[in-house]
Amino acid sequence: MAYGAGNRGPGEERAVAAVVLAAGMATRMGVLKQVLPVDGEPMVRRVVRTCLEADLAPVWVVTGYGAHAVAAALAGMPATVRCVYNPRFASGQAESLRAGVRAAAEAAAAGGGEEGGAALAVLLADQPFVRPETLRRLVELAFEPGALAAAAFYGPGLPGPPCVLRRDLWSQVLALSGDRGARAVLLAAGDRVRVIGVDPAELRDIDQPDDLRPLEPR
Image 1 (cartoon, rainbow, N blue to C red):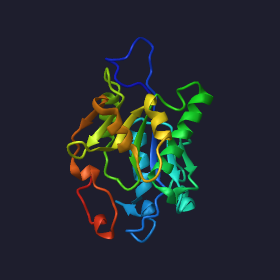
Image 2: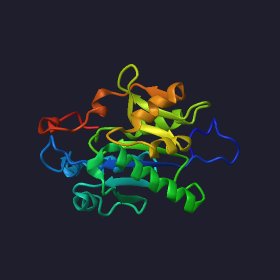
Image 3: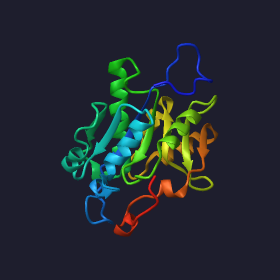
Image 4: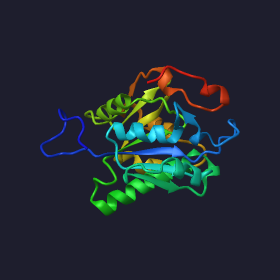
């Protein structure tokens, strides 16, 4: 996939993959929220479909708690959608993010770079309202001169998902531990992160049953 045609050199392609974090235990919801229906579609499948509509591939879906149910919810999707099991899903978000980045890095090493991607979009399975256009814009910004990443703006000093991390930042992700996620890497990158305002309706995450009340369809 090629992005940012105006900024790339002759023949340069920018393959961008995605990591969807879907390994959580959903303790506040009380059930496996990743497979709950949103507009008739399992939540995780909706997020993955958004990635595909934004031309991101491969899409690495990191599973853990309820892994078989999450995988079943993705049945029939393209071969570019791949599940990666994180056996340490209870250790915090860092382990799941590392599992996804490690899968992308290994694919890049095996496939000469393009398979793993020049960058990774990081999404949460419980943010089912993110739009493909938002992901495309983040990709464009992440490849601006001097940029290493792009992220949604949650407030001053609060970049967050969805975000796009250039490959230069992957080693920092692999060094994370505990319940820290991509935000720690984004903050460390400082002014090399481009942030964009995103409609709060897109960034809404599903944590409790009330969060599933009807919203405006996208």
